[in-house]
Amino acid sequence: MRPGPRNLITDVAGLRVGNAEDRGLKSGTTVIVCDRPTTASAQVLGGAPGTRETDLLEPHNSVQTVDAIFLSGGSAFGLDAGTGIQAALREAGRGFVVGPVRVPIVPGAILFDLLNGGDKDWGCYSPYRDLGYQATQRAGVDFQLGSQGAGTGALTAGLKGGLGSASAVTDSGATIGAIVAANPLGSVTFGQSRHFRAALHEIGDEFGGLGLPNSPPPESREIRTKMNLGQPREGNTTIAVIATDAALSKADCKRLAISAHDGFTRAIWPSHTPMDGDIVFALSTGASERTIDVSEMVDLCAAASSVMARAIARAVYFAHAEPGDVMPSFR
Image (cartoon, rainbow, N blue to C red; front, side, top):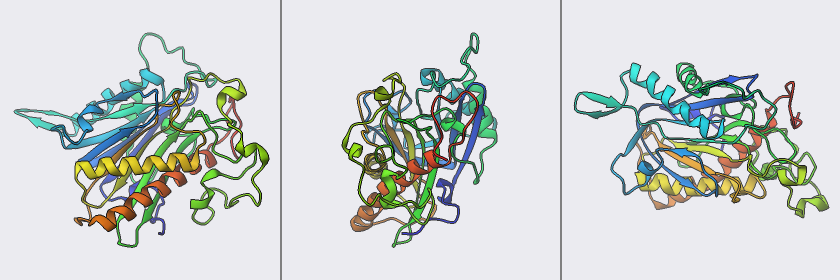
């Protein structure tokens, strides 16, 4: 596999990404806008999810496509971002047609970043509706990683988290991409070393090129979480989207989301804990107009795991230091 030209999820034709953040708040929102209604599903494996409209994504339910997916900080307050995204899409004439009206379909998920040093005294109403609207207006094929959008205030065990993305082109020619806001309970490195657990999947030096440690430090086998560092055990969750230009069914998207969760386990230890709300949304734009057979689907699922692991490491690698941080940044 090789990365796409941008090494971003927007290498999958038919997708745009927008970020909006508030530096004082140390939080923000990211939206993945589909240029046309796009087949979607999702899989939750964390024990503490915060989501919007995920039930409709189950393969046995009637709505087949979505207009956008959002990832947001703000815990349950961040679900308000979906309202702002809907407003922007409605202005653009997007949405599921019901008689004379259109209803934009915008599932999403949130992570907990309320105790990260930012000023959360926002008054009566949270700012996430406006952040969602701004993110949608800014959506394009190029966007920044690290302390941006939904990753603005994200934290891991010992390091700042962030927003990450990566892409790959499979041997059969399908493009697959991931975007993730990494805020896990667990750690992304081997012990306290600078070697990422996702290093096996790194392409070139996309997150530093340090590779695997010659000998994993002894503490690599110890469970290292935010709780060990005195952080609240509830302040977590990694939320992500995996996408491809191959033409998949809704059930195939569900399978792709399940496989992408393997990228969490390759990049974060521990993952999928009772204190994480881990979720992966899956999108099939069908832009390549190629259906795939079973063997190609196996390759695509393997690529989903690898691309997701790389995106998580890139989220942490590109985070930058800011005043008031409660964790150091990787660089």
